[in-house]
Length: 358
Image (cartoon, rainbow, N blue to C red; front, top):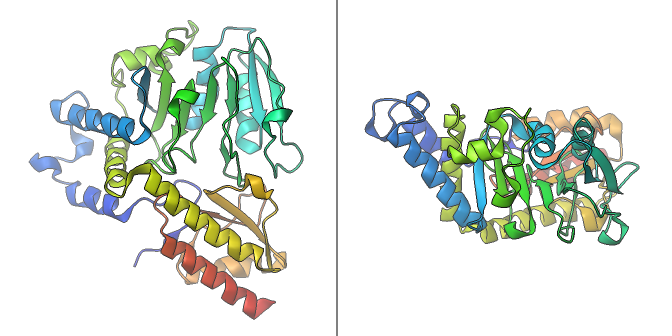
């Protein structure tokens, strides 16, 4: 029996996908080779790449005037690559700060352009600033935000309105967890290791009119237009991660697409938050209108029991519940491949642990 893995990332992958990758590992499509061993420019892999993009376009209903890029470097590389590709030196960009990853993006952007912090959750980052609090610049090149902060478990329940200014979103922990309206965004980027596939792959979905403006110093392999013109094959891509992501896309389609994924994810989050709220032994401090579906943080009333909780949870087959080192406490990540059965097992364990230690 597989462990219920609540890791924030790299995260749990669908068992069906792992089993298929296992079965094809040594002999992919009857080639006598692993998919990791074939040329990225060969006909066979190019078919994998084309199918993955087509399936992703279908899942997200990506408009035709958007390009999908399969890149390396992780979402953190995009903290630099977004301003390099979308802004000129000394131009103004708007950023909304809701926590750790927002702050990382802001710090990196300041190396390349002027940053206006248009909204700031502030303090311990337990809320999301509402639209009325945003102070957007009239001259901003783009507006950047992080829809979900994995460390504190804070999530936007709305898409910021930015008038005609392109909206850029770091969707590393939310992309493919529910339907989104891609046309509301100028650019979306996401590291793969949450809901998409293995670490090593980064997706960028970018509106065509925003490409072709990269600064001269932008490396060619990270110039959005250069990469798009070569179908993301400008250099050797992370082929195995791309292949597995393609399997995940097909798994999502098989299981009802993103509308069905949203129903499952909402049910999982609701079950865990209900258990926390019903208890005086556990506490979630995030504002209820900003609670994350993907990353549920909670603390024990007796922090001295944290180590015991984690040890006993692991023995019960519930892994990677330790909160981020910045905040401590506990964190359960409920990405697409985490089953409702896993959440129910966690809730049952929490209730029994409380009974023994209250």
